[in-house]
Structures are given as C-alpha cells and as structure tokens.
Image (cartoon, rainbow, N blue to C red; front, side, top):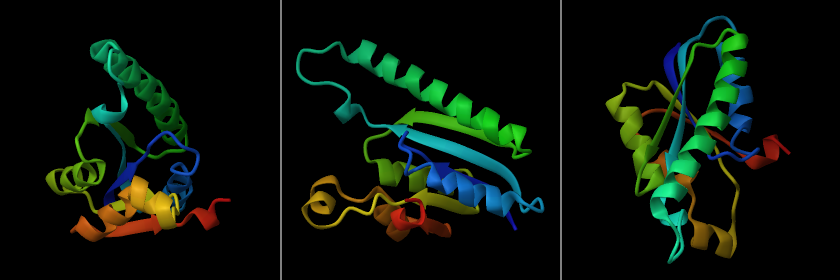
Length: 146
C-alpha cells in the first residue's frame, strides 16, 4: 500500500498520463494521499528585457489554475489530493528532494520519450528522477498514452 504518492506534472497532456495510473492504484483505497507537484523553472520564464517578477507571477497563477482543476477532478473521484507549486533550479533534483523530505512512498512520473539529440538537448527529467530517487518510481512510457 502506498500511503503518499507524488505525481510531478509539467502541464502537458503526456504528463497527465500518470493520473490514470494514480486512479488505478487508488481503487480499493490503496492510496491515502496524492500530491500533485509542479516545479517552476525560472530559467525558462524570461528572456533579456522582460519583467521577471510579472512573468513569474503569471506562471504561478497559471499553474495554480491548472492544478486546482486537476485536484478538484481527483477529489471528486474520492482521491485525497494536495498540490505543491514551487520554484526550483533543477527540476529532477527538486522532485527527488521533495519526495525524500515529505516521506513520499511512490513517485508516478511520465516520460516524454525523447531520443537522440532531443534527449541530449532537453535531458530527461523522468530518467534523472528514476536514477536519483531513493523512493520507488513508476515510470510511464509515452507509448502507453498515445
């Protein structure tokens, strides 16, 4: 039984594939709490000359709206859900640190499935979480969602 499950989301449809697996695990009350996590990456927010504070605040408000919608859907399905939004430098490390510091039992994360140059350029947050985490990780491959 996983009492506390962490679901990192980046706002993409693909990342939301992990929610179906959360729903499956929650049947039969196997999950006590689901935590939706979004790590805002300040490096991608602004280009030179933009209003950093206004951009950051806008990104945070957008994330709040997105997560409140998903949280209300999951709560309506009987899944006790909380949400966390915070700024972090390295997204994968922030996810792993959050899981460790908050006694998470399982991380459910979707992979974008990048290969070749895209994987080298963008990196793979899911893969880094898988390798760095001391908490079990359920990695959802993109093929299972398309």
